[in-house]
Length: 212
Ligand code: NAP
Image 1 (cartoon, rainbow, N blue to C red):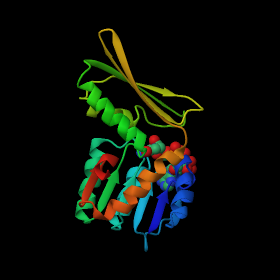
Image 2: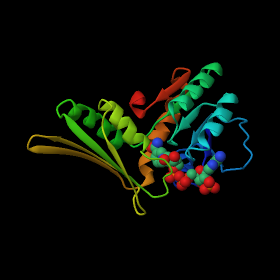
Image 3: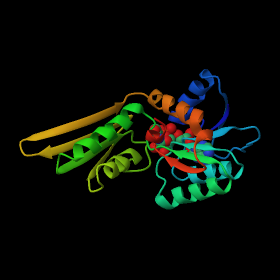
Image 4: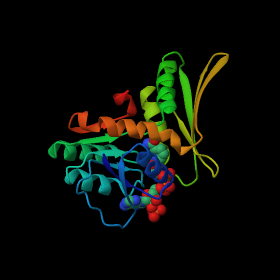
């Protein structure tokens, strides 16, 4: 596939540029302010910033190019706009708050455990360069657990992406923890999304769970 990567020089984008090429994709990278040519592009991938992602994705969808979005910070109105536009253009938009397989399992286990514990809190820890808080993964985890779960955000140099879900009951706690130690963790999920995107229904699909 010919894949356009928005955020070419970013921490995730740089890993994707190499990994997608190694997976035999024809990869084209774009950075902020550079002109974009969607000619011959089969799919676009966005790992940029909360301020840039909507503009990039709407431009790609307007050109009829399906989008795989990893950038976090999109709100419900943004998602509704992407859904509407993808439907109008009869194409697909896929958004995942987390492309790491272990993180998807952590969310599933937390949802299961929440049925047995009355109280829980989430601590999410990311690099200090992450612009949004709480993280998209923490919000998705809280929603899967029933919604009313306090989230604590830590931003420090040296961290990549980590999350602990602590559930408490009389005389016991249960901790479910996921650690992303390298951004290579996101590559298999992005490759899977690219493989499946054109087979998805027109409009918006959210979450790697939908592809597993
Ligand atoms: P990063 O290192 O800050 O990279 C973002 C890159 O996007 C930068 O190179 C930035 O360039 C570039 N950029 C900004 N505006 C752009 C535009 N309009 N067009 C093209 N490129 C543009 O951030 P990161 O750590 O790679 O993370 C990127 C996003 O992905 C964040 O929202 C993060 O939360 C999210 N993320 C999601 C997952 C997931 O699994 N869903 C995993 C990791 C990260 P400048 O530096 O010049 O502004």
